[in-house]
Length: 403
Image (cartoon, rainbow, N blue to C red; front, side):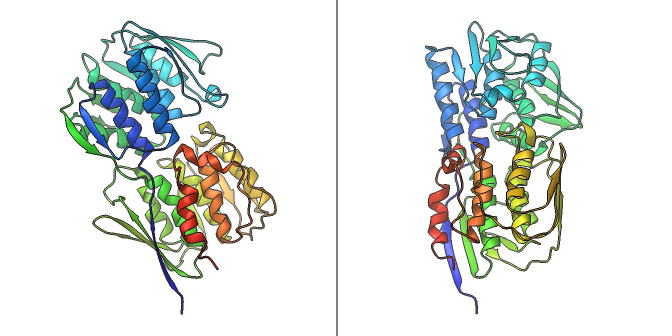
């Protein structure tokens, strides 16, 4: 009979939600009391740069490789009347796209120019008062562009109507921004491809920020790969009605062999019955889950088709190419194009260190393979600090019990 092992696992607060609330709080002159703010590197960086903006002693903002921070600050500084700014980042950030957002801001009168290469950071911004109230933007590269515009919309004199052009990617993150604004008391009218947000004020209130469903996804892989025992993980602060699109991870893992039970205070993950013999899913609304599921299928040895990966080439690394490279190291037959990944059934064999490409999600997804062999080396393990600083500490609580 299998041995029951139960663990309480602490996942971090959502950095995506934290950064949205921090921007709103800055714009409403700190009238919000924010509780449970993320301790992730990206959120600490957002807090640091917003404090720098408040002090006004340095007008160059280094966003390192934090896409949300860079895109949100671009819109925020554009409406900061009367000051000049420079936004820059590390080498990878300077290769990540920004042109659709800049083009949209130029439509409404923002004063922005490129320092080196058109379409990329660093950029120069002359902050000014924006009075236009209508904008169109390509929504097929990054949802962060749309979210960045939504966050400043209530603070524009006439509000803002945003028309989203093309295929909308990572729509769940736009929904997240909508829910945050609505929780703050701001009206958001979303009809088809247009979002209208009127000029509004935010009433002082206390906000408790949710735990992070994206971070919880890695725990699903650990239970999945340690199925020889009856494992049970309790994770506090995750809920079925969350505004985070990555909560769909619970549905994705049910047929793979991990069950999710919702309680009043969190979720319970258990080893369940595997019914899936293959896997196929379109990740267009939850692309951050793709690396985790790719590793899950490779580890299980089942064929998989992961589509809707349009945004993955523009992340901290080109995640499609990175996943392909590391899965091939594992003797997995994998192919890809610019929007999808195909994995053939096969037995994984890991003889080389896993390269993480300075990408937190690559590190945490592949680390779960240590459930099979704890001698597997994850290069640059510290990259997890970007979103889940206590990751290695949390998994150590249960991996020592693995047989």
